Image (cartoon, rainbow over all chains, first blue to last red):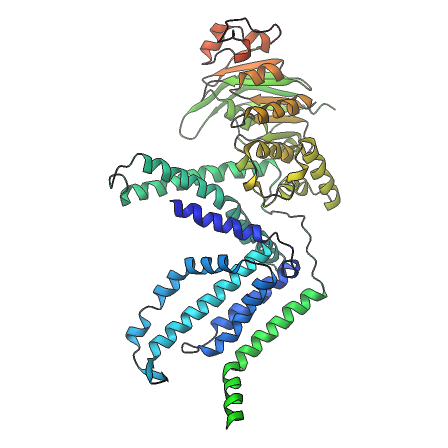
Length: 270
Length: 255
C-alpha cells in the first residue's frame, strides 16, 4: 500500500510544479490542451512499422519541459513508472512477426522488433506530452480548459472531484494497509482474500464519504453545476502557440523529415 | 423580520434500516442564542442537525426557521439562512483551491463575480485565513481546514450557524483559536459537541440528548453540575469544572 502513497506524492509534486511561473505556464490552458490533443492524434496516427518518422515529435515535450523549468529526471522517473504497460503490450510482437524488414549493418531486424519499438516510442511521446501538460497547467487548469472547450459538465465535475479526493482516498487506503500489516505476521493476513475485503471496505467508505460531500454541496446551493470564478484569457500569443505547434505536427506527419534529411545528405555526398 | 429563531416540534425520525434516531424532540431557540447539544455517541445529535436545514425529512413533526417551515419548496431559502459546518472538513472542502471553495456557495446564489470575490476575502479574513486563499485544501493542517470550512459557510452570510463537533481533531492552540472565533460571532449558534468545556464556555444553554430524546434543556451552568443527568446522558463534568487532579484544589469560581 505504500506504493499508493508514493504514487500520490508524485501526483502532488506534478501539481506543485504547475504553480511555477514560466512562459509555458502562462500559456492559456485551452491552448495547451488543444495543442497536446493535436500532438497525440498525430503521433498515434502513424502506421504499425513507422519509427523514424516519429522522432521529430520529441521536440515538443522536450522544449515544453525545458522552457517550463520542469525537472527532467522526475519526468523520466514517471515515464519509467508508467512504462510496464507499454512494455507488456508489445512484448509478443517480436515473437509473432519474424519477417526481416531491414538490416542495421549486417544484423537483420524483424518487423516485430520495429513495431515493438514504434509502440514504445509512441507511448513515450504521448505520455511525456500528457505529463508536461499537467505539470505546466495543473490538473485543475486542464479541467477548466476542458469545461471552456464545451466538454460536458458531468465529466469535468467528475475529474475535478476525482483529483480532490484521490488524496483523501489514498490516505485512507494507506492507513488501512498499515493497520493490516501491523496485525499480519508473516504470510498470514496478507492473502488475496483479505485484499478483496479491504477493497470492498474502501468502496463502502467511499460511498459514505460521497454521501457526506453531496450533503455539504447541497447545503451551499449545489444544483448539478460546479461554477468556477477563475477567468481565462486567450490572447494572440496563445493563438500563435496553438497554430504554430499544430502546424509543425502536421508537417512532421505529412513530410518524413528524417527520410528527407537522409536523402539530402546522401544526395549531397553523391 | 427575525430569520434567526428556530423551533423544533415533536420531531421523530428513523433511518431506512429501522434505527429510531429521534423520538419526539422539541425545543425553541431564540435570536442570537448559543446552544450546545450534548450526548453520548449515537444519541441523535448529528441526525438532529441534519434536520435543521432539510437534509433529512422528518417522519413526524416540524422544523421552523424564522417562522418558515422547512419543506421542499422553502429549502433554498432555509439553506441560505442556516449555515452548516460538517464534522469532517474534508467533506466540506471539495474545490481545487481554498478561495474557489469559499466562493462555491456565493456563486451558486447567483452573485456577480466581483461580489463573490468580496465575500470570499471577507469570509477568509473573518477566520484569519487570507493567506491560504490559493492553497489546495489537501495541503492544509486540521486547524486550517476547520477555519476554512467555517469560512465557506460564512461566505453564504447565514443567520444561523450549525456545527457538528467543531473542535474534534484540533490541537490545543487551534482549539483555543476556534473558541475565540466562535465567541465573536453574533449568529444564532447550535453546536453539537463532546467537548463539554467548549460548551461550557460558549453556550448559555445546553440540550442533553439520549437515545433520540431530549433529556434536559437547561442553562449550561445547571446541566454540568447535575451529575445524575450527566450520567444518564453518558457524560461527565467538563474538565474545567473538576477539582485539580494534582493538588485537589477546587476549580476556579465561574469556570
